[in-house]
Amino acid sequence: MEIVELARTIRARDPARPGWAEAVFCYAGLHAVLWHRLSHALWRLGLRGLGRFSSHLARMLTGIEIHPGARIGRRLFIDHGMGVVIGETAEIGDDVLIYHGVTLGGLSGQAGKRHPTVEDQVTIGAGAQVLGPFRVGQGARIGANAVVVGPVAPGCTVVGIPARPPAGQPCGDPSIGYGLTHPEEDPVAEQFTQLRAELATLRGEIATLKASQRASV
Ligand SMILES: CC(C)(COP(=O)(O)OP(=O)(O)OC[C@H]1O[C@@H](n2cnc3c(N)ncnc32)[C@H](O)[C@@H]1OP(=O)(O)O)[C@@H](O)C(=O)NCCC(=O)NCCS
Image (cartoon, rainbow, N blue to C red; front, side, top):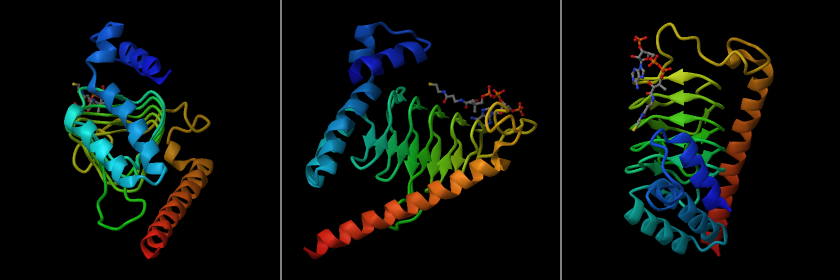
């Protein structure tokens, strides 16, 4: 059951070590993720107005705004949560940790893919703004209040505005990408990044085509 999985994640990851009841009843992030499953299902059924209304109710109750179109993986932990905004075409992998005040937003007003894709095990610090249709690689860490406007390599830590690796800190976890110290130079990963970007573009185009088809019916 997802509620148990989410509560277990909270108990494991929050240093405050809440009990089971506290994790289930007192964490807005858990409520927002579960509620999003309903809003997303309505959205995917084509009941878009109802999906939006459902997500709006969740926002009023949790302070966390997740567009019903956003795709969210397993065990997302939104800690504290107030002020989090997750846009329509955002994608979030498994075991991601997001603190309060984070935006996964777009930079342009264009339709189609315009929000970030956050891979597994990423941590996004309080108040960070991640803006645009790029990837934040697996295990990356984004510092509190950073403004990220471009891709982040797997395992990389970035801070500041615009976000960059802290001075003197090599970017990336050497264990990622077959022992390369700079995973961003991994040719296989590069191909994957290109393929994923093309896939994201195609998804955006399909969404635009579907929208225009619906509008013309
Ligand atoms: C980015 C982060 C993950 C880095 O952690 P870390 O690897 O332990 O890094 P360090 O603390 O060793 O800092 C490395 C350098 O980055 C700087 N730095 C760390 N976080 C920063 C931030 N958010 N903004 C700007 N600079 C930052 C440090 O000052 C240090 O710089 P220096 O080497 O010139 O002294 C962490 O600082 C962070 O921001 N985590 C989010 C925490 C959060 O949001 N908590 C909310 C709890 S309610």
